[in-house]
Amino acid sequence: MASCVTIDDGCVVRHCKRRLVHGKKVSAEAFRLRCERESNGQWYPEDTYLSVCWLEFHGGNLDLIRRDIPLKTKRGEHLLVLNIADIVTIQVPSTKGVLSVKHKPRDGRTDDSHAGICGYRPADNATVGGVLRHRVDRIEPAVP
Image (tube, rainbow, N blue to C red; front, side, top):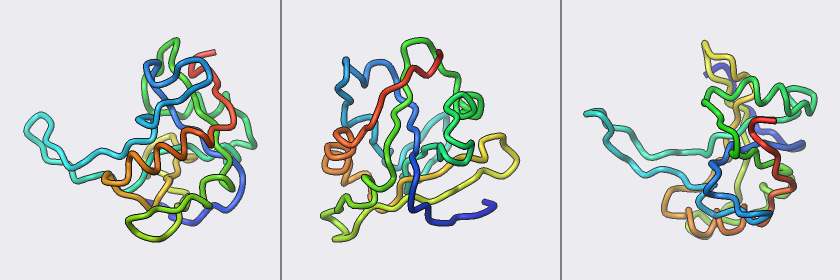
């Protein structure tokens, strides 16, 4: 990874499947970290952060975020915009700490705006997701 610096201000964007947003209500599952798992005969460790894109990396231009997301986005899916100042105040009961946001660009890929919401584990999904869902500033279409 090229760098891993803490981001203190601005916004992050989370890609979200259609089924996790109902009107203006976002499911806590949109912020779920995955437990360790096996897929196609390969073992994957538990997630240590939630992937997001740092909006200010592209000067606040959501269209550039749409271009950089390395996922196939479909009509009806969403981009959730969250203010970093609202994220870093969330307390995590299991660690007695707070969340942080770190810039985590991926080497050799186009998503230099990649970042992560750090400081919780899959065991904290219900608690942290339950708070983050209420901190979403706006919901935008993934495909305009």
